[in-house]
Length: 41
Image (cartoon, rainbow, N blue to C red):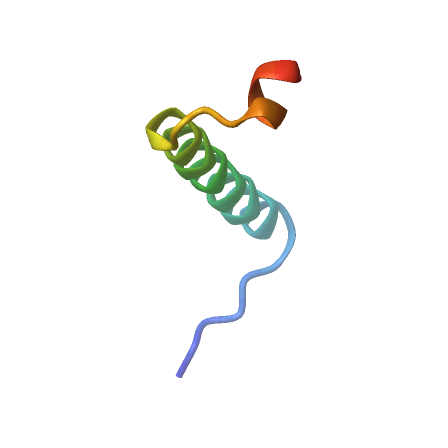
């Protein structure tokens, strides 16, 4: 079955997932055509 992750390891895994998600978001932004909202911010 699935291994239960607790404590520091859990935080590490979560941080890793967040970092990956941010990278993907950054990539998506760079690849997306510029919209007026993006230019303003």
